[in-house]
Image 1 (cartoon, rainbow, N blue to C red):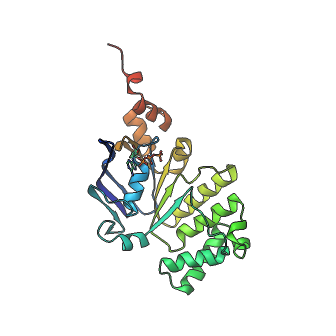
Image 2 (cartoon, rainbow, N blue to C red):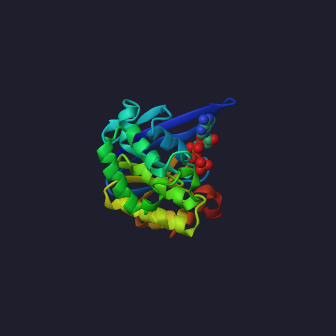
Amino acid sequence: MLKIQSLTKFFTAENETVHAVDRLSLEVAPGEVYGLLGPNGAGKTTTLRMVLGLVVPDEGIAEVAGIQTSVDPFAAKAKLGFVSASDGVYPWLSVREMLLYFADLYGVPPETAETRLAELAGVMDIHGLLDRRAGSLSTGQRQRVTLVRGLIHDPPVMLLDEPTRGLDVVGVQTIFRYIGHLRETGKAVVVCTHRLDEAERLCDRFGLLHRGRLRHHGTLSQLRQSTGREHLVEMFDDLMNPTLTETPA
Ligand SMILES: Nc1ncnc2c1ncn2[C@@H]1O[C@H](COP(=O)(O)OP(=O)(O)OP(=O)(O)O)[C@@H](O)[C@H]1O
């Protein structure tokens, strides 16, 4: 459903070249939640931006439901949902108006959009908010509306960028419930996060990204076997401080 092959992006600034993403390959199947994990500057956002067609790769391809993002970015975008911690709302619109507006932007026919909105409002418990002005919502309410917005066009692939950043316990539980819904409805999901503890509970497979390169990938039990470490945080610690784990001569 989502296929990334040898995706590469270099940035040059002040005569220095940064390998933001270096020959990254991964695949995510329908109903699978893939954790793309890494410290600051590892290349997570650049990867998502290439998948979204916002940054042109130097090499490699990203393919969404069979459509290459660099060949047909508009068609690929229609197959993608994107939710980020920094998503905003249009404060002057009602929640219903805003969500139907987004459905329209994605070319969803009005009747389908109404049906879809009613269904998702039930899933994310926003029925009571539909006629409120988006600008008057609390942080938690706004989060639920944003999550519905990401799914309004029923994309087969969902990208979540730091979805739990800045949320309280209830907000984090909402994200867990949302990801459960995505899995049950057969979406291919990529979650980028620093929260390794949450990722362990949420994701089916993982890619550990460090300085643009995928250093380890697999299920948690495969990673445990290949790294000899129990938790993702220890695996990252080894990647970032390799000398600490070397045996003295
Ligand atoms: N437009 C740009 N110009 C120059 N360098 C860039 C640009 N965008 C990203 N980079 C560099 O590419 C590398 C990867 O950045 P990226 O934002 O993809 O990392 P990240 O894993 O998302 O980090 P964070 O978790 O801090 O958001 C970093 O070294 C960053 O400074």
